[in-house]
Amino acid sequence: MGAEIAQSLAFIRGRIAAAAARAGRSADSVSIVAVTKGQPPEAIRAAVEAGHTVFGENRVQEAKAKIPLCPGHLHWHMIGHLQSNKARDAVHFFDMVESIDSLSLAVEVNKFADKAAKTLPILLEVNVAGESSKFGYNPNTLLAQLLEINALPKLEIHGLMTVAPWSAEPEKVRPVFRKLREIKEQCEQKLGAPLPYLSMGMSGDFEVAVEEGATIVRIGTALFGPRPKLAREADGP
Image (cartoon, rainbow, N blue to C red):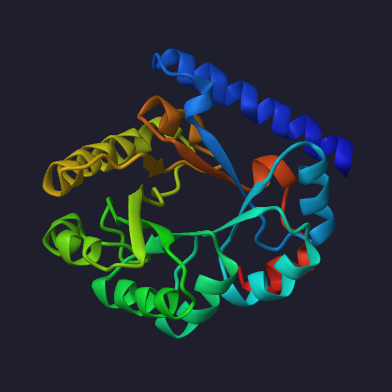
């Protein structure tokens, strides 16, 4: 397992470097969040041995069970939909929440961050394509609520995140990534401050995302391979 993950990580880094070069960017401007949904701690430790330290979980309950079994120096991002009743645990277990998708959720997370005396970096999730099956802000609603979220004292807005529609042809989702970059620029104008992070692109489309300005890509299956069968069954189809 370890050698395969190390090889996959090096291959992904090479593909990111090539995509960044095509866009006239440095490969160092793009970081990988290794998505560990359904993956055992052994896979995470193999990635750590290959030099990786930033990981993402989709569900708070899985993170609660898994993170204590992993090396303590890792950085964890919450990348899945966050329910308000899981806000307390999210604040405790994660170093960044990438999936803030409403003012009410932001208020709840801020409340528990305040109780924990912790300032939490966040990304605001945008449903760029308007898919009914996905969570995330409508762009207009985001811009309307942006200043209220920014005023919450224990949250720091670091950028935006999106989950693009799945397509067998990555070029088809390029407009989604380009649109998120444009929305980020609108947010920066409204805030009067830079937002350094654009989290967009996953295993099937991360090169196009990098070409369009991604600074974080969320990579699961391209790094770890398919999720173990039991995890898939527990997760549903």
